[in-house]
Image 1 (cartoon, helix red, strand yellow):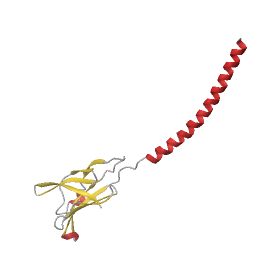
Image 2: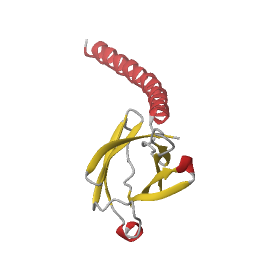
Image 3: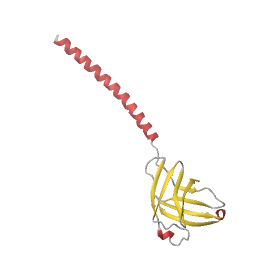
Image 4: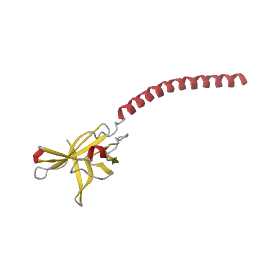
Length: 151
């Protein structure tokens, strides 16, 4: 009886090892497919670099350029013939894939101190949402939210 029980246990053990080996192979290939899929699904961080422009109003608009950790904004007049610096400040790029983003830019006063139409603010908050980059601009006591679209 003990011999028969031992044979049955050995047989069951052998079958379970074989089943585990086959299952393991399937799991590895499945794991490889999952890893490949995850790599393909990995999204790049939001990229705001480039040129942004507000709607034109009687030949005047605001234009921002984001590059190399800097955002610079100009008042554009005379249907694009004249540009005046409004802001030059820091840009902290997003590190994740997101549809909304905001950062506080520090004014580079060295680059704006001689600009007649430049903001005197030390910082300015920028927000990106629904494909619009926005900030508050103030001049002569009047403030307005400026909305820019990527060009």
